[in-house]
Image 1 (cartoon, helix red, strand yellow):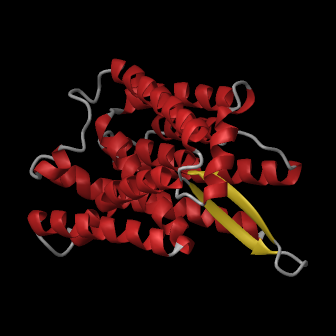
Image 2 (image 1 turned 180 degrees about the horizontal axis):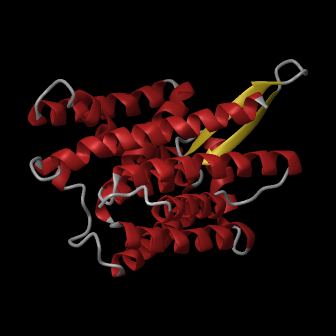
Length: 280
């Protein structure tokens, strides 16, 4: 139970960081060029953008598999990739915190420095993997959340859930990637560990950062629709993830987390709408 609660707590922290960061980024989006460069679409509400992001994800997955199979012995390649991703995505979260006290220019500079510091810390102290992964998760989720409107994002997440299922059970390349990432202790998973009765042995659960990024995307995108919608999405994500985690742990099964999480978020989002909680 302690292991499950630890993972749920890490999941919640990532969501809260993403929501907090999303609020700040949305407020500064029209004024800060650094923030404007984070948006990767010209029309957030264009449904066709969902297809663009799916192709982007497929290409990224294909590139990662090729790198693992061809460059697995060149660890520096993956270390540099991790360093760049954590520094970039993490700086977005640091910007939100620094922005509470400083102007946009100083906040931007401070965020870049802190992002690089976080990446360096993970490089020197591997024990900071969870912190690096959570900050990167929150930042990356915000980028997707401000780049896609609510409807295109839901379409994207549905397709992403289907891909997640196929990648785990059919092509199995997601399992191959996960095993490699866990082996190399890269900040692309979040890990919960607890000691066992046997000295020196620990039980562990690993969750891919993609399974935490998806809720942040929808939570941030929902803010532009209604702040209350973000609350419903957050509750849906936590509830569905908690049920999923209890199920897979008790059944000792390996299942893709994204489909149940997306299902839970959409159900709670629709429930809030049907109950009349959103005032547009």
